[in-house]
Length: 151
Image (cartoon, rainbow, N blue to C red; front, top):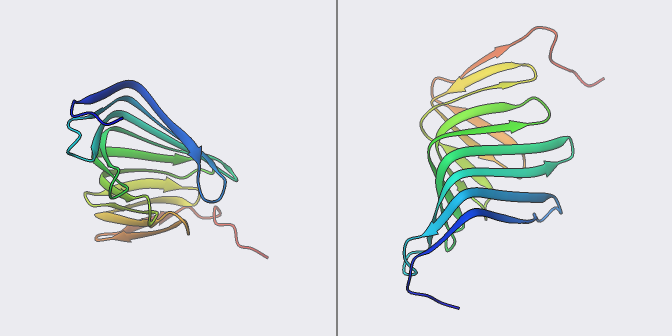
């Protein structure tokens, strides 16, 4: 059905599987579409989880906007990513393109990885390939003995 009225939901959840069959779910404390003319859903208390081979990956942010026409999520303000394998990062103002499976954080990033810590002015991530590019004042601190070299 189509409505010209505002649509709002408390405790919203969207779940499914990605193209590789990995389970995911997106939760929001509230979700609201201001108008049926706008393809944007405002999300508060946003959380997402994706099942990876080495455990779950999680993303949390106070709020965001999902545009269902462009398949993009915009997170204004802080966002935290963590994974079971020891990766964790905090960033600001992230744009996620669900079709291209890319993410760009434009207002600083800092985090830890199993081998040390990092920071930069911005970040670009290829979610399919699990590749991350740090840009502008990129810093990486390695902890001796933590790097595993394949034999």
